[in-house]
Length: 196
Image (cartoon, rainbow, N blue to C red):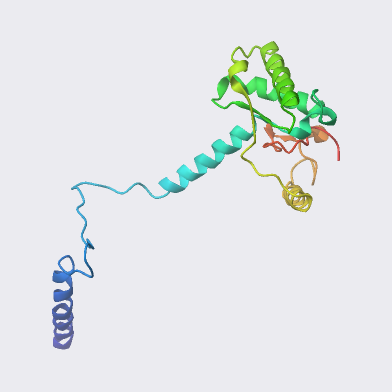
């Protein structure tokens, strides 16, 4: 018992100088080892910064829903293809509820770009979007595209994970790429409701 007390006292004797000198010692000029922290200051809850980053990623993905990509134009021209028309209907339905602009992926031809922009503005105005002229812009999407090999791998991984009541690989009733009212091809993949 006396040995326990003796080892404890020796340990405290060795640790005490370290504890006392903790904030007064200096490892270099300008190094503040004991910053002033206001009384009652609390660090943010665990996960705060992660949630902020997740929110930023979600917002970027949502903004990408409002991009009209080059592949949505029929034969690279001035008319929207079948998926482009479908996509624009989705955009018109959601546009009043979000702060994002409608971005048309720019082509090399400025005349073609402006004609496409006018068409999208007219179509949105016909759907009741009164501020379409201000919200439709030309530019380049922030999302990066995939090479063919990467897209194929991503698609295969997605299909392998889709074991649901409709069977493997069948997403939603009638294979229309919707399941539980969620569009699984968000972000402009352009797959729409076309069969593979």
